Length: 498
Image (tube, rainbow, N blue to C red):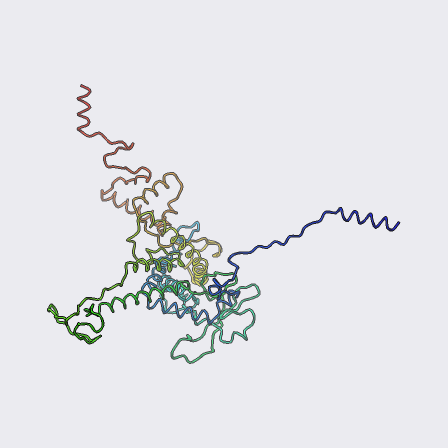
């Protein structure tokens, strides 16, 4: 009986299908380490964002970036151009409440304060600091010397001055110069009382604990959890050094070749019949003089090989790679558009202008809105400075205007603008905003001009620009693209009709 049951289960087990187990092996080529790429990936690590951007690493990068910007004309020009393009002449506030008169009062008061504190200059300095320091700091403080009712001011700080000398004793939520709460929000900043690079520095460990509400910290976070910034031109620092070394090497080779007026050489073999001449002995030559050579010797000039024809191309490629980390086209970085045409110039600038708009939006959120909120807080305490009856200040809508970018072909842009306005795909507010102007102020100014022109009898009909898709191929073509008949053509037609 037991044998029968054993045989039954054995048969069933033999009938059960067998499932083959296959080991799947897959890998990425980029994850393979071999003798060919071992040295290339030797410095790749798994450090966190804040560990990779440690205080010492940031110090070295800042010092090298500042040195390069101070000594490299291209680096200086790129940083200055970037600051001028992003900030321009400075942002302009436009209030969007329903009370037009109240909007003008607020805008005029803020514009007067911004001019008094040199807000545009400080913003340009902050943008340059972000390029070669990686971050910019500003402390909201009070300046009793200001001529405006609002005494708010911005005191700029270098990144070196925001640090914690006793960081180990601060706590786990502290990262060099900044203390965070459990939610990751900055609570306070540690600001050294003296710059660490000051030659007459008297204190080394003394710092002030500044509340986070009074500190503006502007940097670009490239990784999640990153608390401090690194210079924007960090990837380009080795390229700047290569460009300078290559230029100096080419110049040295050209100077070396130019230092020798001529070389004496002989085709005779060693011990031949040529007269003896002292090797490497310099000979003074007079200008426009006929010189006799020793017997068997000839004179020739050293052929200069530098700069080679590839010198300009190499500089162009290096500058193009340098500017790429800033989303800047080559012609802007080099200040040279000789090799550009209309189409390529527009395509390159589209990426650059989009990057500028992104930076301006980030600047509005991180810097300008906080400055405006602090300005409102102080202005609300001054009688009759702000209009009443507009509700809570926090609910007042506003926007910022920036300088517009000039179009490569103003005629084509005006035609396209007229087409957009004609088919109602845009608004005057949007078109004026692209130029960095307030459409209401522009229309009021235009109304004043038209009224004065009518008063003086200078009124002329407004010229409507031709839409871009209706360009005339030739001066002699009519509105349908066909050539208009001339006087000779009309006479010939009359003879044929007769």
